[in-house]
Length: 375
Image (cartoon, rainbow, N blue to C red; front, side, top):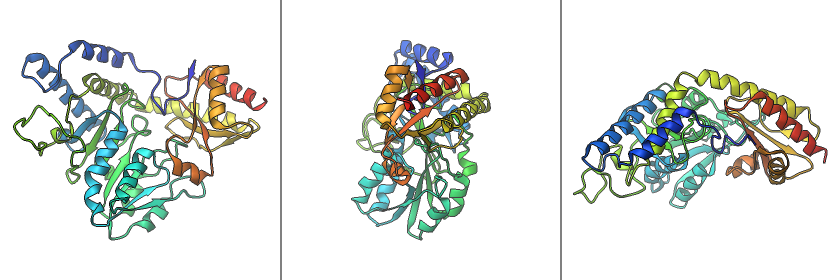
């Protein structure tokens, strides 16, 4: 089986990640919920993982690294935990048509509470139009919520350009689901106030891992409530981070996997990026030579290649590639309906590679698509 669905979840994990997860499962203790040695040892490991992530992403402080079960939860904390305060004031938030439903749906929920949301379009080349976004900003704009890479086409705005066109006091929230682990991200240098991370994609962790990193001026309220192992006498959530946002038992194996995946990437990021970009070039060029294929992606460092077949719906193409050629891709709307509307698409096939794929797999895939188009 050729796995080209890495934008959904990474298909291969490094041995060091798998070993760390197995050890974490064997440890069996609940970090920070008991006072015995094993619980405290697990808590120290969790703290070490916070430090690793903070340094990797140029974060602001270790206590402002909060672990989540995925990027969706991180985005919900960032959006609902902060922007709900602005809704009652009728404030405005700017975002883009390239966003995933994990951004669009929380914002839609807040629109019902009074928040005004403006959507920046794509430009003529299919990229996020930063100039158009700048024209949506007013004195009443409190935040910008922007993806660092589209999960549909792999298009990516310059986060520094976005920061330049919004006011200094405007919060910048970034969805890093497809970008984290593929490109260098420095929150402080880029002026990112909140970065939502998916642990199980480019970061090489397991499913159930994610994180939210945020600045000193970004102070989310909790969206879930429960035990934290601290201030147990207090019926309110603690007022300090990370405890304020981490109620309930943390997934220790998932957190450890994210820490190990980050360490693995630390010295291999450029190597992985080069391999992914080369394979993406191969796929895009190869698909461009096949009659009946329409491309929607340009070469990108995220390994995402979106296309359509003139003789077949995207879901059926994905099904046929799986059943007849043992190739895993994704068809449909990819939980990004406004992006497809902007592209005038009713659904696309998305192939997404990782550094663990090979050039020979790319050639096999291209041959499979060629055969599909000739049916």
